[in-house]
Amino acid sequence: MLKLIMKKIILICTFLFISSSCYSQEVTTYYFIRHAEKLRIDITDKNPTLNYEGVKRADAWKEVFTNVKLDAVYSTDYNRTKLTAKPTADSKNLPIFLYDPKDMYSESFQHKTKGKAVLVVGHSNTTHIFANKVLGRDEYNQINDDNNSNLYIVSVIDEKAFSILLKIN
Image (tube, rainbow, N blue to C red; front, side):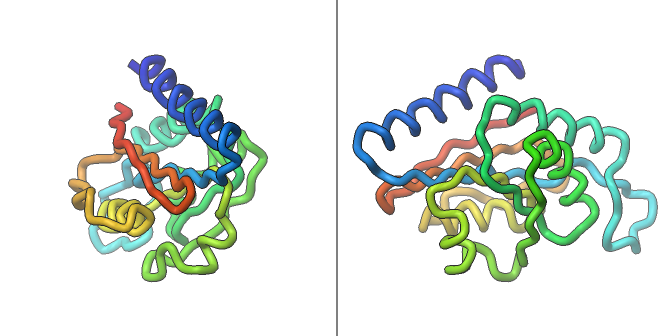
């Protein structure tokens, strides 16, 4: 299953690369994921770490992005998002930049990421909103709290946005 998904991602990336090369258009691609499974022992803990399954999933995301050239990795300033982003960022020798989930897709963010391939790690109540902001339309709904497997790939080519949603289990 993972190999099939990787082939899809590689196919999409290849298509985007060829499209940008053929027409000299600048392509910006965002890979949006929700943080991996978190510890739910203390319901008062607003900044939990990842549980065992979450650590495994964070490492699996690294594998998903092995053949994807990333230019930047962004995360909210929470343990669970930073720990989800860390294996992928480390494997690409990239720092993790923080973004404010209350100020998603700001002009500054757009400027810094234009023409790049960017991994963005967020939350069940923000990931779909961020993807929708890039798309310029409401295409995706809020993620269920038990869903840590969605991968939204949103590409902007010549100011037109396209997307695909994959489920990586």
